[in-house]
Image 1 (cartoon, rainbow, N blue to C red):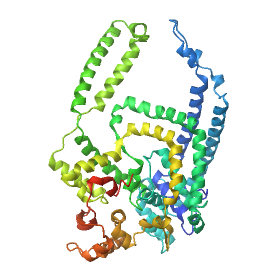
Image 2: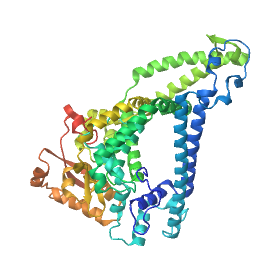
Image 3: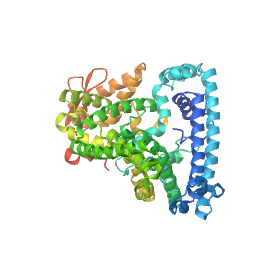
Length: 561
């Protein structure tokens, strides 16, 4: 969250600005000073180990000797490892090593700076907010906001302005991901970082503020960032690809080996995470809502996917392999020398085959777990619960006759985690192409449709302003964002007041819809739908009917790509 805040201070502690508010929130989100120190320390150690391990695998291991090893004599592993060669010798690898070393130095400085800032924030929590290291683990952010408002006594400080200050960058990212005049590729973490750096941070100056200068020079700044990133990606692509491959093997290899069921675990795509997110929805709030959506959607998708044929084939293969596994295991119990001295196929011994067959059986057994069949009544409850947490989608999509279409679309947003590993590598290879395409489409962005100058907050995402009732009546996602904000801030009466005013501005009352306002504000809309809010109250809302012949263009979440 601090990516756009380049300044190293803690912000204005007298009149809380974006930097200071974000520092306070991040400190609470991370769980206090000790957690911040541990998290940043471990991250730094991982980076240092990674460069050591990459140099070790690249330079110190004698792969030629390993490949040509065909005699029956026993060898010590030290014969194939030469630590004296750990540093690269080729010019390209030397350059990459130097660049990565510079990155490590910058990361080290950044970690110490982060820890110093966290220490200063801890003092503010203890001395000014009267919250000690034990309370920070237990107190809610809403209570901290109340303390901030009471201590600073600023009429412009309230839950809405505080959330907007924290979420200024994220709100703009949401707006740009939902912007229909700009093509977003199948995003991965690497592309997301490039996208945010080029298109979001270009709006901010070195102090983390959006000014008239940064707005007027926005497209030139974006183009400059794009060309810089393009050059870096092209020059460093082979080395970065190598790092990603090794890092993925280290990170996921052990997990998938010991927990094969993770192969069937799903996760949200990058675009889905940004498009599902509401404006001014803080990270901890969104994490909880996203977790609830994931739990519901996993049950729905697992029940809809049928693996009958696949399961029969896998069970047959497992039976055959299991028979051989037991045979080899019994033979090794008779004489343990068979494990290493008896060759089964080629130059592979019994021990090698036991390991491979055992891992394959375990993976297949856990990856093809039987799925529970949902009855109509239980499925209805799940879809109603899903509709509750994604209220910006047309409720028609959750009706029984349309569910097959909506499930296929939601499934495309909530994919198997293992597919992201390959997609990350593929997008890394194609990253120069994606960046080049972005440079050609930069002129399609109209900032006046995305950005607005708020009288108190300054430049913010236009659709994140909850007092603009014209936008609320036209944009279901903004209306749902306000509704969610009201739920997350029940003790702040203004949120409920804004919500009711938004309803009254384009709805006559709970039972009679104001058609004149509807026709004026939603000329292309033909259907009224009902929202069942979490408090049990029923409201009517304007939304367009889903056109399943062109469903990717009509949905609020999926956009035009």
